[in-house]
Length: 476
Ligand code: NAD
Image (cartoon, rainbow, N blue to C red):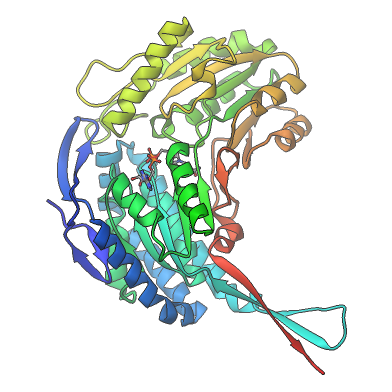
């Protein structure tokens, strides 16, 4: 049993009614347990964040930046433990767990830099009218609730925590019940750095704990990353209180492959877009649009590449892809395999769970999937790729945009003018051209349409935790 809630600078045991099992998905077995935080512990965490706010928002930006650099440094010092825990609890291959850690480190470093620049942003506004002066103040939004999912626990939390702390907000973070141990590192680091008590609070739990936080009337803002179904509940709570909300939700993203591509290179990008984190990515490019002229050459090579992926336990084998992270996710993906069979989809690779212990599925490819198939329209969140062919650029753009989601897309073409033109036409928040999904902290993250509201990363990620104030003075 683990003590895992960090409230007002103290580690405390959960007093909620839910017992949370922390599982090793490669074995399908628990390796730790903890009790969820109770509703009154969520109250205590929000109260601690509220009382820490006046002092924290008055600290100099350079002092906050020093704490953020401390987070980056201390994450690096915990590298082996954090990489291993992600491998064990998420089922991530080692190289992916390392990239996640590096991403979190880079995020804290980047927002330390933006924090240092904050004083220069509070400047005089040039006015056309005589007789007045005006100045801008970028103030912290206040006490923020952060609710995150399990697929990139270190990263998603860093993308919220670092800008929130940089802006001068105080925070209550609720990690996912599937991966509740990983973000404890942030509490331990806060302790090690002497971050003032209450600036960062962490409460663990399931839906009840999340709802207690998102419904709490002591928050000034809530930032949520997760599913559309929970996101809409979070938005209802925010609307009931007329409170700002950031939502980073699901996706059903397209990868568009034109027939002037190098086939092997395109296969590499396609496979990465669906097998990274076993396809459990909001940004998985799970809809492949392949041009007629290249489809017959590409699909067999794609099939072979997916079948050749080494799938196994990242802690004991050299693998390209681990298990799905939870049994619930495994059952959900299996239900899509059943739907595909019912719909009579043509399966070129996989299409089944693996016959071994743990929550493994095979990398899967369905071809000529009808546009109204549930597998084409719904987020599956597993290594399940659906393909369709297209004839023209216009058709590719129309089919890629024909989705209720709009998170990301990838365009593969040797004709860079065309690739840029298609990128401009896609209704999404981020497009990669001839690339794997490289995410840089300086560029934004977030979606259009059903993929969410707001942006993380870059200066936009900081603005999400700032309120703009102007002070106008009459000179007369
Ligand atoms: P989820 O919505 O089930 O859970 C997300 C978080 O919300 C968890 O911490 C959970 O405990 C909490 N929660 C559950 N019920 C709640 C309630 N009623 N009120 C408040 N909080 C509640 O999502 P998940 O299964 O953890 O994650 C997968 C989803 O997250 C996918 O849809 C994926 O696309 C999305 N995601 C989006 C992004 C992005 O940046 N757009 C990034 C990662 C994941």
